[in-house]
Length: 75
Image 1 (cartoon, one colour):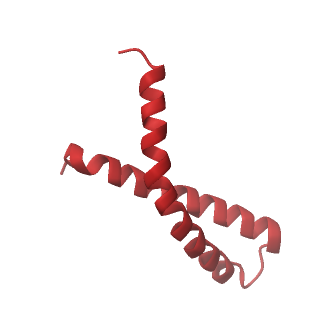
Image 2: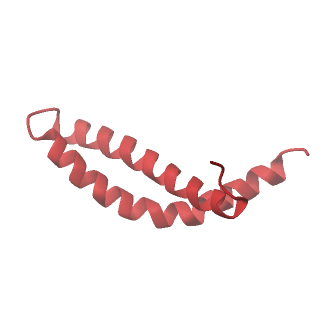
C-alpha cells in the first residue's frame, strides 16, 4: 500500500515526532533518574509529555525544513 502525496507530509511529521520523542525521552529519563525498577513507568510518562509537545512542533517544523532543504538542493 502506498500513501498519496497528500498524506506524505502528515505521516512524515508524525513519524519524526514519534521517533524523536521516544529517543529523547528515553535518554533524558535515563540520564536524570537512572535505570532502575521504575524506569519504564517514568519513561512512558516522559514520552507522553514529549509526544504531546513534539507533534504540533513537528507539523510546523518539518515542512519548514523540507522547504529549506529543497531550496538548498539542485534539481
